[in-house]
Amino acid sequence: MTLPYGSLSTPGVFRSVFPAFDVLPLVFDSPHSGQDQPADFGTVASKEDLAWTADSYVDDLFAAVPATGATLIAATFPRAYIDLNRAPDDIDPDLLTEPWPEPLQPTRKTRMGAGLIWRYCRGTDTPLYDRKLSVDEVRGRIESYWRPYHEHLAGTLGALHRRFGFVYHVNCHSMRSVGIANPQEPPRARPDIALGNRHGSTCDGHLVGWLETAFQARGYAVAVNDPFPGAYLVDVHGRPDQGRFSVQIEINRSLYMNEETRLPHAGYGPLQHDLAQVAAELADCVRDRLGADP
Ligand SMILES: [Zn+2]
Image (cartoon, rainbow, N blue to C red; front, top):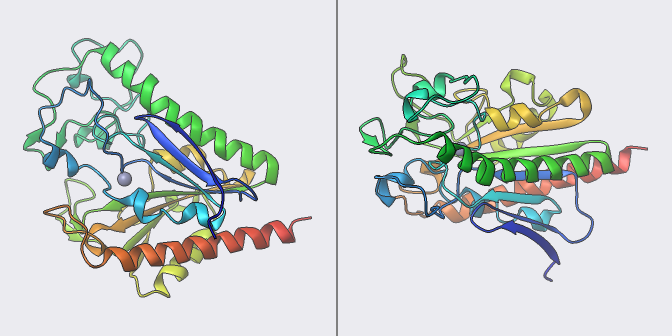
């Protein structure tokens, strides 16, 4: 039986798929798996080098989400164009042709070349640009890509929260199998699954513990708030005291793809199957909570 689905999209920006009936207060989003390059990107990086910045296939790995009763929102533009998981003032002033008119707050990520507008792809030896970007150019990316995605995600979470009194948000990513969390540390191998709730501020330990157990039961090594505690998206949407629960999931890319060729390998199908099961079980938990709430 094919369930009826609804969908919304802004071409080139995002796509949202949700059940037409009985939608649950459960939203998955994939901000870094888009591949449609905007015409005004103006990057000097090759498509292959750009792919290194992407959470490749994450939207497809979670493709079963709408069948569970939850909503799946995915960006369709590349993360290297503008990063949805950064604040809009997390900009490196050295990238710009002129001063930004308002105060900027560049973070550690920007200093590593990976702020709102990335400086490099594939390590620090492959620049994305051979030029500086104008303030108007960056503003255009914020207003035409960053903001519509955030407004759609916030609107979806807000509408579900108003209707049900609570909402769960699962922010989906993938990570290199070996990497550095900050420049002072040597590279280290990463777990299969890294969950992040910013050390408890974006959702309670119950949801994180539930996910940890669900993945461990399927044989995955899980770490919590290490090496990634979660970034902007869970930070702005997670308000556990208000019934808004946001958790970040990072999936080790070596579980599903060859990190050199960027092509899926034999692990892709089994991982996709496991993610579908975890999403379905989480959806059942949300249904149980709906049934329990007066
Ligand atoms: Zn990501």
